[in-house]
Image 1 (cartoon, rainbow, N blue to C red):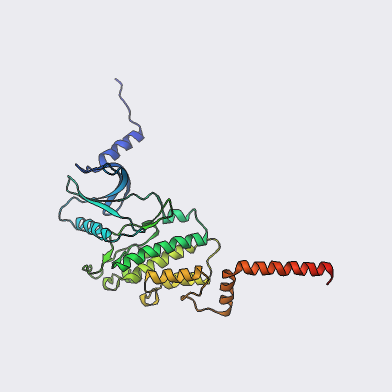
Image 2: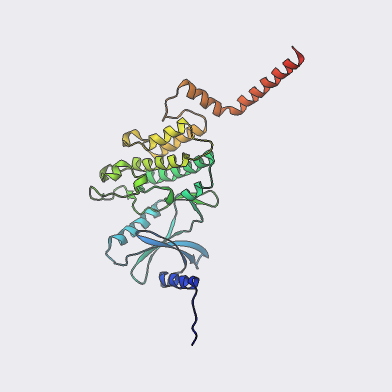
Length: 307
C-alpha cells in the first residue's frame, strides 16, 4: 500500500492557509502573513474593488468586550486623524465573521529603518532620513498624539524614499484618560526614564524626543564620516534623562539638525573658537580647497621661475 507524502513546504503552505483569517463578504482577499505582534497579526491582502494590495491588521482576541478590541478600534480611529505622508494611512475598519476586528491600511514596500541602516553608512543620507522621521513625529505631536514606542523597528523606508512611522498601538492622544500610575509602555532600550518609572502623568512629546535621540545616536554609530561634536551633542540633548533638558519638541530637534546641515551653529553645543573654525570649514570647504589649490599652484610657479 502506497501513500502520498507531503513536503515540508507543502505542509507549511497548508498551515498558513488554515491560519489566514476569514474576511467574510468584504472586498478583501488575504494573500499572506506579513508579521505577528502582541495585539494582532498583519496580513497582505488584495482590495478587489480598487485593484490594489493592502495590509490588514487583525486582532488576536475575538472577545467582544476585551481590552485589546478597544485598543485596536482606538488605534484605527487615531490613525484616521493623522493624515500625513509620513504616517501609514488607514483605509477601512472591518468586523470579521468570528467576532474579531481588523483595520485596513496602506501596504508599505520597503525596509525597516534598522534594516536600511545596514546598507546605508553615509552620514548625510542617514541624517536626511532622520529629518523626515522628525517631521512625521512633529505632525503627530501637533495633533496631540504621543507615540510612546518610537524605535527603528517601527519606522519603514519605502522604495521611493518615503519614511513612515508605524504602530500607534500604545500611543496616547490628548484628552484621553491616562493609564494607572506605574503602568509601563514602550520598548526599554528607547524608553524615556519617566516612562520606565511608570510616571504616566509626565509622559508628553519630550518622551518621544528622548526616543528620537536614542534612534539618532544609533544612526550616528558606524556612519561615514564619523559624527562630530555638534551631532553628538544634538543626540545627547535629545536623549537627556531630564525632560527639561531635552528639546521641547520633535520640531525643535529637527530645526537644530537642519542648522547643522546648513553650516549654522546648533543650540545643543556652545561654540568654542575651534568649533567655529571647523563649522566654517565644513560650510565653505569647496572655497577653502580652491584657494588652497590656487596658492599651491602660485607657490609652485614662483619656485619654478625663481621669482
